[in-house]
Amino acid sequence: MGLIATGLRGVARLRKKHIDMAHIAEWRVASKEKVVDAVLAITRELNGGSRKDISEAIFETVSREHRTLAQAFWSAMLLAQIDYAESRFDLRNEASVELAKAVKELAIEKNWDMGLPYV
Picture 1 (cartoon, rainbow, N blue to C red):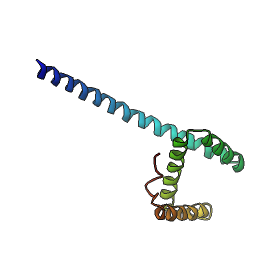
Picture 2: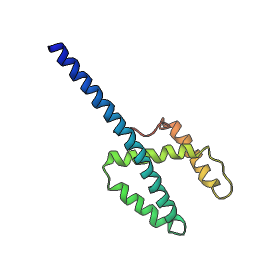
Picture 3: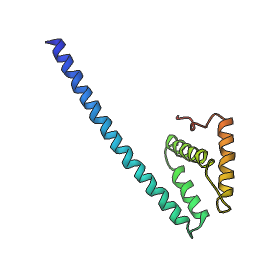
Picture 4: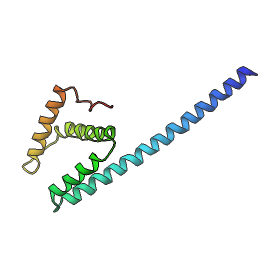
């Protein structure tokens, strides 16, 4: 009886884990869509808006977050910059790609090319 009961509990845990993993996969898709929407909202505001006002809003918002989340945010921005370093460019975004390349070099030098530490 004990072995069967233990086995059934194990199956229940596996089913729960499978359900949880499916839920996590759905959440990640929804989460990515939210991030895309947020980035699009920022870029639309930048189209004719004040870069200074927008940068202040980003700084103030991130600065009020838990420090671990703030570091996670900047880590995501760092990883985006590293990816952006390989972008095609013309005169309109040449400086952005140049900056991204410098950021990538610094990240490699500091061993941050896989992101900032999670603390």
